[in-house]
Length: 493
Image (cartoon, rainbow, N blue to C red):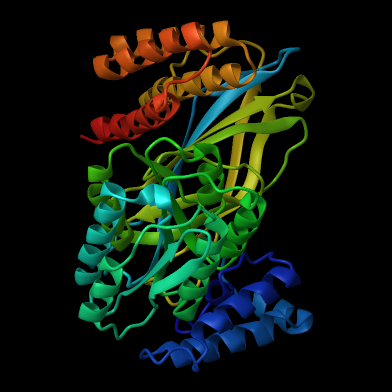
């Protein structure tokens, strides 16, 4: 095949053995992204015509077979991203009992000759203005929203939605904003009503869709200080719809009254995460840090598609960076974003049952990594990901890699607080107290004296009153989650 002729599989971003339904889906997504009615950037009309030509060839079985015969051998290495996998064990043993094995996946940008330009933003702030937000909380939220509005680049879009038991668009999504006018509208927001998160999300996603563009970072940031009642499932369904359109969600809870389990699940549907704002004065720092991270986005989404292997279960998946958080393990898994200066790290825990050990090599996972990169008009070709381990009669004496040990030791702290919380929820307070005291001991050994003191305080509080303190479980949960990130920064340094 002449070198100037494009690889049609790369044009559509599919494997060469992709079934027809995958080719059709990839064509529809590319055509929507590159259609001349939506894009006027130089060269994108030619890319649209190339996409059409690729589909015309690959959707016809006869033409596809003739085309395949002209192709050189497939190159498995991606020119856009790279990945590495580390395992806690080099092999598995022939045992008549279940075994655990851990895999640490790292996905990062491949080195580029030229500096990567930042993608434009399409961000919606969804702000709780219910009665409980009155005072410092709402004042800090309004001041930060004004600051973010002023910091926008000409190519960025920022919309603002305020909600309580109804939603109001304060700043509509537009590239031509009258900033002075909208600053005044933000400052005039008043607290009133109850908390209904669904109404805020519904209005927010509508604003995002007004300027939805695959070349932008499309993201919603929800700030709330309370629990929503009766609309949780509707919110989660809306988050799934957002994920299907490559719209991310970050959820930030202020104070101690909000439901962290729900906000974790809500953001996790899109590969996002929740954050804990313990004091109103921290609103500005965390919101601005989030904006800076979105500006640095390289890939707004990394998906892992896989087929479940017999007698093997993914017990647990946790994103260590760029934003720590628990990940749902149903395919496709929304792993999260890649930043220009921060790789994506995800730790998997596999449970292997004895019936899986019937050969010399075990396949833990067989799937593919798919990324969505805003600055790239063409789809990114997927990467095959097959995780295997040898099966041996005797245990290996090889020590686990340092990065695995580091991740596991810090994740164990996070899981201790999870076990303490689960035990307390089940009424097993003695077990919850034991887990918290063990956590305090481990924290002291790492020099985390302040957090160890909080864990001991909560252990004593649970032992005496059989309840958490007002902010206890959130303080411990998000502080141990932060240790995962600090541990990775220490390693990088």
